[in-house]
Length: 79
Image 1: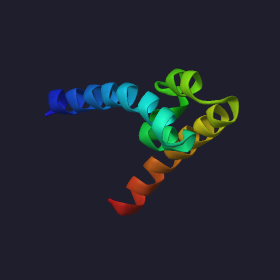
Image 2 (image 1 turned 90 degrees about the vertical axis):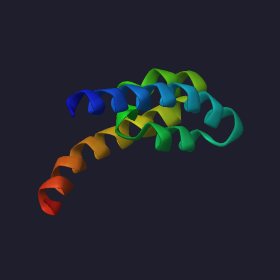
Image 3 (image 1 turned 30 degrees about the vertical axis):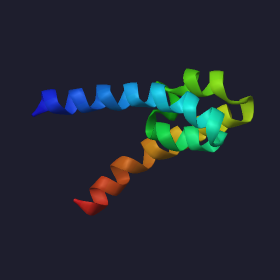
Image 4 (image 1 turned 60 degrees about the vertical axis):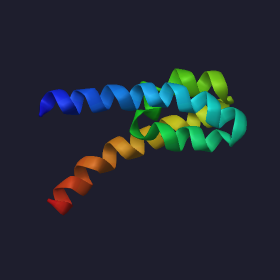
């Protein structure tokens, strides 16, 4: 069970690293943040910074902080 969760997390991270440059080139910078989700503040931030501008990187950190803050709150409300 835990191995499957770890594998899913790794595959999600690899998919992020493939999709972020594509989204930055063919879609828009904010799509990169949406693809990254909560990892936009740490794991995928260098990739976002490399493929977008400084303003998008700031929004990326803010998005990551918001996602990371509200997930435990929403889980405690829903479950």
